[in-house]
Length: 215
Image 1 (cartoon, rainbow, N blue to C red):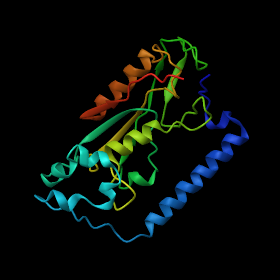
Image 2 (cartoon, helix red, strand yellow):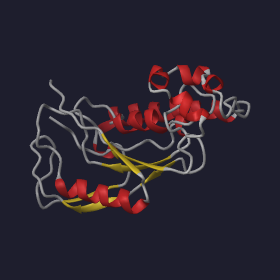
Image 3 (cartoon, helix red, strand yellow):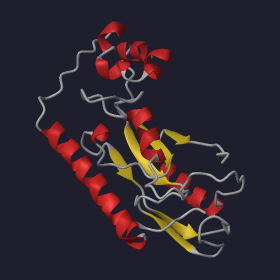
Image 4 (cartoon, rainbow, N blue to C red):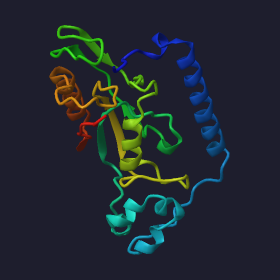
């Protein structure tokens, strides 16, 4: 059964896991803060110059010809990219840079009684970027994963996203995941609030990850 509890409601074991997770992230951030400033080696008109170790860490970048796009001047700079998913963890080291990730707050009244999480039609909802806990007891990380693939910063770190220059606008779709083989599991009111907020934010592209997990 899905668990939509907040961290404060999930017991000492979860708080300990969260503390360990926070410490690891803090250590990663501390290490990057003391690294030498990143110097971009990519040059206009030269696709090969963009194929750094960071680029090669994701085979997909080469598969879609992202190096040619970068050489032509397309990096996502100036574009707001909406991620409608589990929240994108803005403090993750792969989202370096000022205001790289903006988290939207959405609220309203539910239209759907979900049999897998303790909510029902008529309940109020509010999403502010706080991570949800999946049925496996782990923090929902899918939105962060998707955000990294789409727009993780190119800064000399372990990897970067396709549109590394884009700003990520994160809206929570209310799904703690993973799916349990159900089709109807997305509340129309939650989705309308998220899409409306992303549109109002100026997001040029909105990514949704659709699929049903077969357990």
